[in-house]
Structures are given as C-alpha cells and as structure tokens.
Length: 236
View 1 (cartoon, one colour):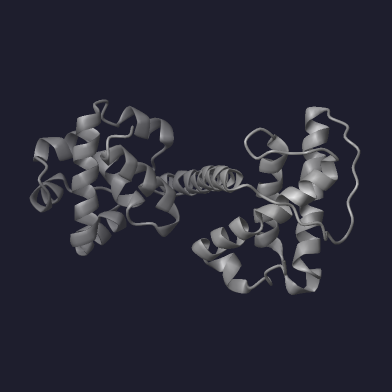
View 2 (cartoon, rainbow, N blue to C red; view 1 turned 90 degrees about the vertical axis):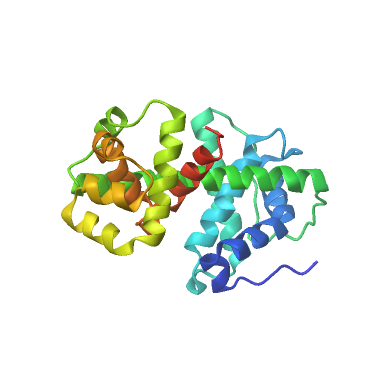
C-alpha cells in the first residue's frame, strides 16, 4: 500500500494529524518490531507506545530539508526506543534500515487500543504544556498554584456552580472580563450582578474566580478548560 505523503496541514490541524497517525499504525508497529526484533502488541508492549509518541514527535519536527518523512520518522522512532532501552537497562538487538518496505497487518482491536493510547498521551502532553503556561500567567497576577489550592472551594457542588457561572460570564460579558484582567482582580459586586452568584460567594472565592476567568480567556489553556468541563459533568 502506498504511504500517504506528508503535508503541512498534518502538522497544523489536530484532526488531520490524528487521522494521519491512525493510518500509519502499521508503519509505526513495523518499525518498532524491526528495531526490537520480536513481535509487539499494542495492548501489552511499552515499546509501541514509545514508537507512537516518537512518530508524533516526527510530525512536529519534520521539514522538507530533512529528506523523506518516513525515513525521518523511522530514525526518530529508533532513537526514542534506544533511549528507552538505556533508561530501562534493556539490551535488545538494534537493527533498522533507512526505508521500511514490510507491510504489517494491524487488527482493528489494536487500532482502537492505539487510538485510545495516543489520545491519552496527547491529553497528558497538552495538559503539561497548559499547566506550565497557567503557572506563568498566574505569576503575572501575583498568584500561584499553592495559593490557588488554598483558595479553592473544597465542595464539588460549589466548584461546579462557580465554573458554570464564570464560563457563562466569559462568553457573555467580554467587557467585564477584559476589565477584570486589566485590573488583575475581580469586583465582587460587578461579578455578582453579572452572574447568579451572591456577593458573599464572589468575595469568598475571589481568587478562584479570577483564576477561572484567566482559564476561559487564554487560548493556550484549552486543556485546563477541558478538565473543568469534566468537573462540571461530575466526572471529578
């Protein structure tokens, strides 16, 4: 089967990237199997997870001047597997060519399992980046994760009520949100008037509310917004 040509939109558009990765599970498994010199299975072998992350890394870093994409991706997979072997103290027989012509059949169950694994890893990676960005933004507002934990409501119902109200506020009251971010603090009275929260609630949870406004206002914090959506749904 002819392999899909690498296009710039694969790197730039998440859904196209996901389809591209899904369509290349056979290639990823083939390379990892060739490196490890033994059969590998998506549901059991960490080496395939490492290879999957390496393939995603290759997408991020590939440029036309680096030659053929699949040769480049194979090289990245080999490097990451070798790093993994060294870290784990494993010593397999390493062997890999510049091009890979062997076609490896992938069972539908393996594909489904790999998709779940990829999404899990991608979610963890995105959350890591978002948390790092959030920490830097909080610092600009003279806040920290430690202080935010101390100022956060302990009851889930209270958190859900605050999240729901502030999400609506950020969608409907852009002027108030911009004003709040400019000042670096909330006006309990203004927030109470624009939401279904009481002034007592907005005063008590002012730092938590400011943090929520920040989360719903900065594009790079999308993963944290996803986490809050789960909290609203009662998954936390």
